[in-house]
Amino acid sequence: MRPAEPDRARQAARALLAEAGIESVPVPVERLIKARGITLQYAPLGEDLSGMAYIRDGLRIIGVNALHHPNRQRFSAAHELGHHMLHAADLSAAVHVDRIFNRDRISAEGTDPNEIEANAFAAELLMPDAHLAAQIGATGIDLDDDNAVDALARKFKVSPSAMRNRLSYPW
Image 1 (cartoon, helix red, strand yellow):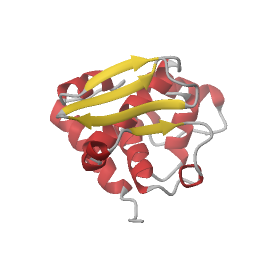
Image 2: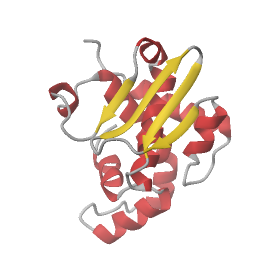
Image 3: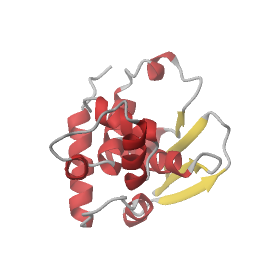
Image 4: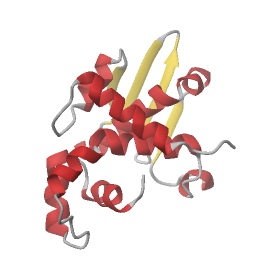
C-alpha cells in the first residue's frame, strides 16, 4: 500500500480555494464542485453511506446522502471532491463509496491512503488554516469549551466534531 500524502491533499485544497478566489467562510463547496464540471446529487442513501464518487464515460458525479445533517453533507461533498481531484484514475475504474459506520478494518484504522487524503482535503477546504488562524487569534481555543468550538463550527458550517478534529489533529 502506498503511503498517504495529506500535505499534497491540503495543498490541492488551498490551490482550489485560490483559483476560485474564495476569501471567506463558509466555503461554497457546492459551487466549487459545479465549477469543476462535476454533477452533485443528493439522494437518500443507507444510513451507513455518507457519499460516493465516480466517473463514467466522462461524466463526473458526486452523490451525497440527503438524510444526513447539512453539515455532514458539506463534509461528505468536500471529501468526495477530494477523491475527484486526487484519485480520478481510481474513480474511473470503480464507483467509490464512503461509509461512516461499520467501516472495514482499514478505513476504521485510518490507514487507507485515499481516505486519509480525501479527509485532509475536505478539512482544509472547509476549514482553511488561514481562516481558522484569523478566527482563533493568538490566544487559540480551548477544545474543552463546547460553546467556543460550537460557535466556530457554525461560522464554518461544519459539525462541532469536525471542527474539534480539525483543531486537534495534525492534518
